[in-house]
Length: 311
Image (cartoon, rainbow, N blue to C red; front, side, top):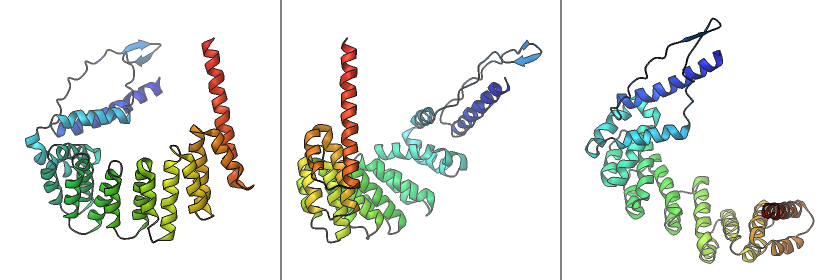
């Protein structure tokens, strides 16, 4: 009984905090309070007739935020954002980021002008990230011009990285151009690998031609590995050839070989098995054979289950 009451109190506190944040910003109307329920005495113990409120999930909280932000008029966006970023609770609740993304999707130029006028600090950096991410979904080229115009510094660097990752999903060539403007770093190299992998999923030949011209040998090996694994499901034989002939023996080649086998075997298990048979005895061959055996067992199990279902 005490546990149930405690759970109910915890849920009420969570919902109450969210309600106070939204109400203070005048974003939604406060709901009428529930009428109090009369306690019932049972064996000398007071209980409530209502069941404990469930804890809100993260998804339901996000839905509440989205609904609250949708009630703000476009003409009030700038003023509302100014008020929210100056309030510790509202800023921590994530409401202002949702509002800024909405503004950017509707009027990216105005939202960008608001963001760059913020004083340097965590909110400024986060605002740039939100604007460039939302803007990329509207007009990648315009978003790139905006990022280029930002003052030099860490905030611009972070915004540029975010833009490149967003564009890699739809314009990997543009993402690579952005990445090449960044100073050499692990972060930049990770971006190049990601963008190249996205490119290879649609045009592995062009991606490979570009990757082989990269002067840094270590980075070049990572790029070739990414291309091979990205193209393995569509053309396992070509991916296997990349791994065997273009990657140097070592960890990078071993990881790529295992991933290629896993993806290739989904569509051509026998061809993948024949390639694994060419590998010398060792950990890589053992791991690849294990993958093939697991996939075979899964297929047989699915066939058996399908046969039972038909009966």
